[in-house]
Image (cartoon, rainbow, N blue to C red; front, side, top):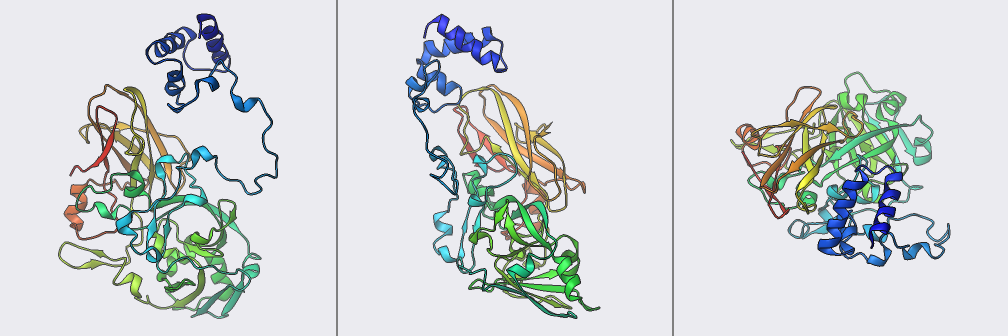
Length: 438
């Protein structure tokens, strides 16, 4: 590429609002051309190192030389083939039995705060049921004045509402209680998602059936092979619980509870029963398997906490991370996600020296209650090793704890509600690994 061609190219970039002055960009690009050849220009601008130089500016790329496919060639859209790496993944030793196991959301590859339905983590207790919505019913009974059985058509006759809320398994990060183990963001924090949920407020349905005076709890039960069930306090049911039939603008995916599920915003994901078949109203909790032998928090003295519903304030840096190493020193954009089952995120700080000092991050998304909040910070990296952390504070003034603070109260026997400050170690070569600082 000659100087004239380069200048013309840079001027065209400038006309589209590029950030750097032409002279600075020209010097940078000429240096790249000199050191690495023309293919490296694409790499320096974020293009794959395997790019064909013939498709890079100022050449005319091959895909502009012919017509593309028509509008009916793909009636239900799918991502580009170049994004095929963005997918749920499993951990072999956790998924020996796939019928009762988990897959993980690829957090590091996502943008914004909405998790695409197709990559929301899965958690099964008896595999994925295939339910005919025309044969599915939701029964509400027990301590009610007017027991009712609703078809999906009946349910959709009630006033609908939509809300953006996160969904998190209480075991998210549970493998990290005794030390750093999962050397991938997707596996250390990937039992987490945030979607727009659409359905009927549970309070609306309870008003329809009329709850009796002494009613205090509701048993929610699923139609899967495990009949997964949890006891839900009436206060939550009357507050913001929602009976959901749509997710991100379309019907629920089967793995997310099709045709109907419960969502308890900000609470343990397993209380948001999928494939919901009945709600029984009673005066006390049922103490079923998933709230006695499971989903209780074993303490250091051997006792266990029960009904620890709320997912505490938490955050994690999503870039850099093991899946997203840094290629060059200089200006970097550190970004991440924060969330709290108590309400809105109020503040996030970032440290690059393991918590010795902190800098306030900026919010780069909407800040909604009980939803993921995206944050970021620009940082000049000199190539030295760094320990990158984020620390979130929610609107109740709850501050995300260190591992030392969390273990002082909880010990190391639990696998649930791990919300300690997470540390990524950035090495001089740009690689990133999972480490822990007390």
